[in-house]
Image (cartoon, rainbow, N blue to C red):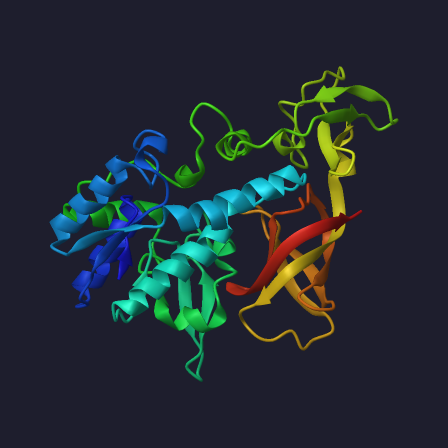
Length: 355
C-alpha cells in the first residue's frame, strides 16, 4: 500500500514500487473536512485528493480515500491545542506520523493483506545482519525527515518502506516527469495539514475547539510588567516577532509560566542558550536503554544542525541530555531525537531545558 497525499514525493514513491514489480494500491488520508482545507495545498482538500487520484490513474493503480477525520482531530489537533494551552509548543507532524500514518493507516494496510506500507518520506530503512530493521536518515541532508519519524514503533519498521529515501528533491521531480505524473511540478505541501487559513495554527486550534484564551502579563528580565498578552498559546520559546510590546531593542521569549499565564522576555539572545534538557516519553527504536551514559548527536528541531551530547536514561521513559555546546531555544513540547551517524536511536519530548 502506498500513502498518496497528492504531492510529487508520494506519487513517485508509488511509481518506483510499481516499476520494481510490486502490486501497488494508492490510499489518500482525508484528515479534515474539505471545506476546512486551505486552498489546494492541504493534504485534506479536494484538490489534493484529485491530484492523488490523477497520479494513481497515470500509474494505472487503484486509488482509495480513507476517512481519518475523527481520529486526526482527537489524536493530533486536540492534543496540539492542549499543549499550546499549557504554554508548550507541540510537534503535530511527529504525532501524526506515529498515530495516524504509521498507526491507523498501517493497521489498515495489514487488514488488506498488504506486505508493506510505503510513504514519500525522505528517510531510509536499514536491515541488520540479524534481519532487524532500523531507521536511517534520508540520503539528502536538505530534505531528511527522520527527525519526524523517531516515534514509529520499532516492531513496525520491518513493514515500512521509503522508496525515495536515496533521492534528492530534484531527482524526485525528474523521476516524476519521466513517469509523466501530472503533479511533477506541484509546489511543496509540507505542514499543509496544519495550516489555519487566515489565522495562525495555535489560534486556529483555539477557535476550532471553542476554547478561551489565557491572557496574562508580559514580564521583562527585571520583573517589570510590560503589558498583558492575549493568550499563552500564541507564544513559543525563542519567539521574536508578535510579542505585543516594544522594548526599544530586539527581544525574545525566554520562558512561559502556565500557572501564572506569564510570558518572560529577554533582550539577551545568549539567555536562550541551554546546556541540557530533560525529556519524557522517550522511545528507543535502535536498542533498549541498558546504558548509563550514551554519546550521540541530537536535534531539538527539524532544521537544526546535529549537536554532540551525552544522554543519561532516567526512571521510566525519561532521559537527561547534556550538550557539548549550548543550544538555543530548547522548547518544551518539541521533540529531541538521538542519532548515531545516520542511524536514528530514538527520541522523546522536551519537558524542560537546563541552563
